[in-house]
Length: 225
Ligand code: SF4
Image (tube, helix red, strand yellow):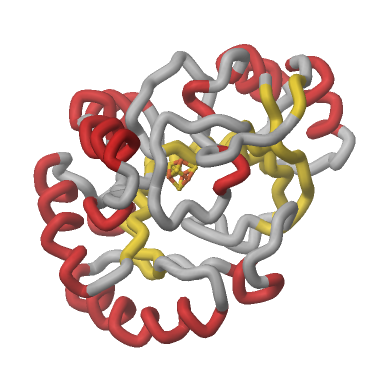
């Protein structure tokens, strides 16, 4: 598997925010979000080939209860099924962070799905814009993931106008509001705090959760945290 980084930190986002976790970041993605905060796994994928054994040993070395398999898009990584089954056999709690466009027979305790809204499309890159737009919302895949795994639905919000799209996805998938999290788009604590001013009232109104981005608050736009 091509791995960009493995590191130990606190989960910054979602229902497990604050939990000490080992992150396995696969490199490679089938989407190209214009605001991607890990372009070294999508636009310019970096990393090295590592075996499932090597990755599992690195994870187990941290003696953490929680492991987060993220990306890029981990569900397209060759070996992700073997890796998750191996980590499950070791008794770890596994979160997979995915855009929800591909399924695989993974072992997973929390499927953290981040459906991509129209503001993610890279309109200045016609070739990728077409691929991205065709791929970013696969309701057949989202339904399969919803029905098979415990899920949280983490939406990146850039503007109040995004709510119509979020509500459409939530309605079509019949999501429990308690499993829906709104997360501010932004790469700095200041940008996130500014958006939180209007995102939090939207959460209060709809019964959604507000998701922090603890790693950005602490370290800003930095890798390996
Ligand atoms: S799905 Fe995630 S990794 Fe892929 S381009 Fe979008 S933000 Fe980046």
